[in-house]
Length: 234
Image 1: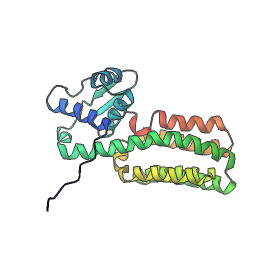
Image 2: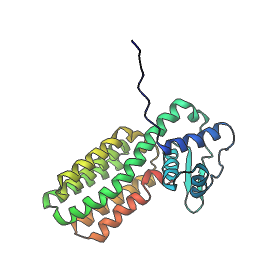
Image 3: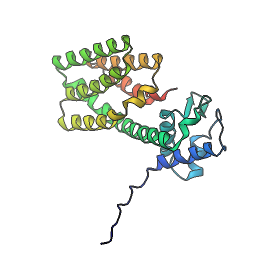
């Protein structure tokens, strides 16, 4: 009997772009500390959209290969560990990074919707639960338990979704968070004390904005959270 193997799923374009840049780094065409071409230039050269390039660069940043300098552009990290470029470790990190980046993009739109609903529909018990999680997040940071802190941030977003009162949106939020949960280790690796504090302040502003029925405060916090996602800032 003829044995046939299943076809491997096609690679996402962002992963292909990331792998091309990694290959150039391995071949010595890119050096540690080198500035990368702009997103527009990369997109034109590879005939993909800028969104695909941005996703690839974000996944490389998550993997510890690229650093973003505000107002300057994207650079190969100066302190890049050569061992990181070995096919096994970097592929694992890239896969995790792409999953996180894609989930972040989807969660941005979703969190705006559920936050608006929470502003309208949340009850005192919902507010109490939000602030309780915020309190636990503060305790986790003060105790330097970053992994636990990150798990609590995921829980916080589920609580906000539940407060909105729409079960369909709540399920979608849970599903997206479940995509991120196995890769929390990679987010944790990129966290510093400053990033942790900024993340906490943003989440607290979301909770306080919902409690005060202050739409501007709550939605600006959501926008800030995803415009410069804490683990992708530096």
